[in-house]
Amino acid sequence: MERKIRALIVDDEFNSRSLMSKMLETFDDISVLGTASSADEGISMVLDKKPDLLFLDISMPGKDGFDLVTELKKAETIPDIIFVTAFDQFAIQAFKVSAFDYLLKPVDIDALEETIERYRVKKSGSNLQSKIDVLIEQISGRKTFSKITVPTRTGVKLFDPEEIVFCEAEGNYTLLTTTNGERSVITHNIGKVEEMLGGNTFFRISRSYLINLNHLAGFDRKSKSLTLLGGDKQMDISVPLKALKKLDMLIK
Image 1: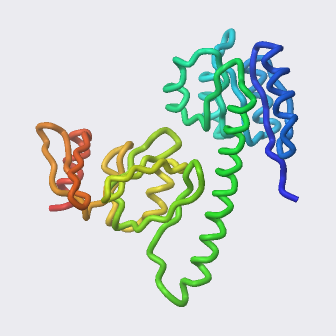
Image 2: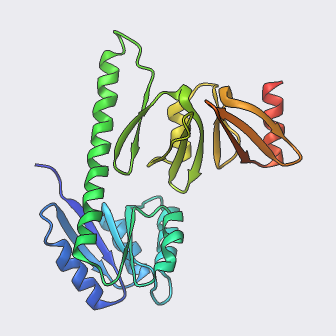
């Protein structure tokens, strides 16, 4: 039997905590580990109970939801986060700190079901990736498998490294751009993606960008930018001058 999704709720409003807890209890595959009424209490409970999902209010007295996330990142113990708030102006900031999803109060059960379903897909995608990796290992002695498998928010995608033009950091996620101009959100940070790609074809030009040197067309120190070509598409990205100097030394 598959383990249930372990959820924790952090919200300073009693009614909000109670309602969310009751709604989550209607899902057979979710176990509510408990609730917390402040960021500090939430941090303590996350470190102790290690939930899979954290339903987190943003606006709370004292430390807010973003402060809680910052503290958890320092402790290197951070579950998938679903922000729950009455203020939609926080949406962009929420995704910048790598939230899994964002729900507006009052929470609608249909919206909650959609979010839970996306999380289920993410979990099954991670399992699928592991199975694909095992399969690749099993067949590696018989033939060459040149693609890499990476998790996305809705499952798993396979990419030929030669078709990857560059990767851009988006918090704990990575935005991957291919030669046809397609952009995919990968649920690995850019450091992990760099490890997966390996070899000397890919170069970490800065903290935010990993580029495929085979698609490098040139760079300009004055505008602090470099040009990449993918198929018939030209892509320009801005990078620090120090990074361009490092690149210059590499390709000379």
